[in-house]
Image 1 (cartoon, rainbow, N blue to C red):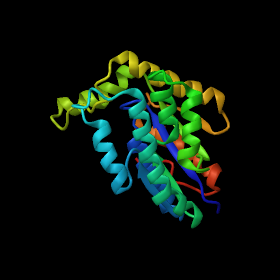
Image 2 (spheres, helix red, strand yellow):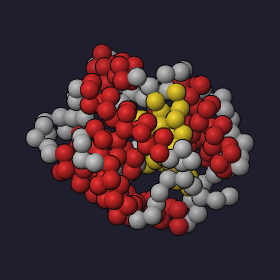
Image 3 (cartoon, rainbow, N blue to C red):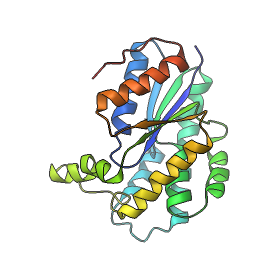
Length: 220
């Protein structure tokens, strides 16, 4: 069984964190040795950078500074976790990865997709995803079950990126869909406006062919 790097992307509230966690659990149950990580984060250095990036008080952060912080967190995660796992024959499931910078900073922030992709290449050192799932849903729907729901439940306030205007998040979604059209062999767009169980079944059905294993496609 070949090791694979699987990534999950999407706008805020798309369900990628839950789906990536459930997909990882399904792979492990099927006997696949796999690590689960998130971006930015996954190491002590990367988690410290995450705190700065998502701090709602950091409103002065320039787009290029934001990009380089994400790249630094990513480089550390690859060096410390992802590359060693892949070298040891383990698979990795990652909640956000290099495509997030293309969509958020390259397209939505206007820094340019080509620039971000060149810098990404230096940060990941060849650790490119074998399969990327973009969980796609309307921005309003994502926020209704993500940041807005958390605030309504009194769980947490919106982080710095979640506080951006709806137009920004529409651009992020557009950036992801542009990427998917450019790389249809790697990126799979999943309709995340459906119930969670349907979304997860679609993801696991795709992973069965990639890993050549039988997965429980009805875990939820």
